[in-house]
Image (cartoon, one colour):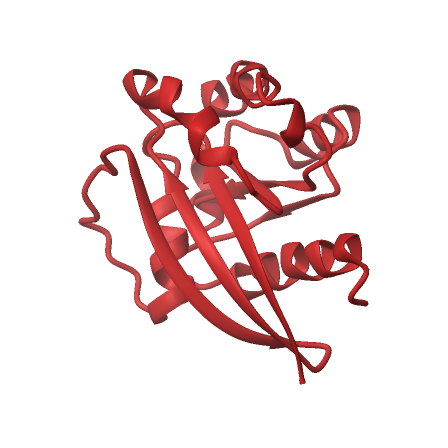
Length: 175
């Protein structure tokens, strides 16, 4: 059986749900009292995609401005990325350009496939980021995909990680 190892970075403003998304994906549990990530958290997940055993190194990057200068050093060797925003906080998607500016300081990261993910889809009644707006931003910025999810309900959690993994496998020529 073929094997693959990919480094996946997850980034975006603080409080958008990056850590709860990762925890839901890894454990199936939603922890509403998740504490703020300091710097970066690292996780490992094995999965089977198209008969390929994939090991995902998931790097959950802190969203606070004071940690942003660290991001370029954690990007080295990344195979894919997820930019996450909160559908209830318009500023979290408005800050995408600031994040992309940091990412683009690393010339090796410019060809890394990215998907745009709106978190907290269970809070539809508090929505401030229109789905069409986010979809168009994803297209305009060259993202390879767009989705919304809820770490609370589990909506699209598995699908997001499977989608980015398939993209990374395609880019590597394995599928």
